[in-house]
Length: 105
Image 1 (tube, rainbow, N blue to C red):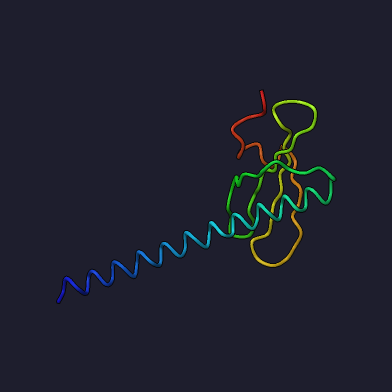
Image 2: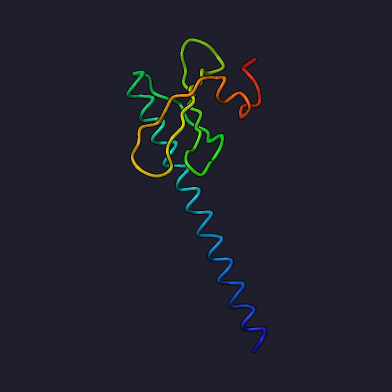
């Protein structure tokens, strides 16, 4: 009986962690899509993709990559609020320099 109780506890804990991971992944996807939509609306250029750089308690920092005339693609950074419907806030390189591995070569 004690083994069955431990197994139930483990399964409940595993499901709880799985749901938390899924909620975080959903928040990351929503933030990336919101940053891409805001980028396209403000600059008139379609982004080629996004990458989540940091997840904080209040906001998610997202990098949007887009093509101009050269390779590698240019980048724009946004801080997307986690809660509420506030618009994404564009960030400068100085704001995200610690999060990025380095400038483009």
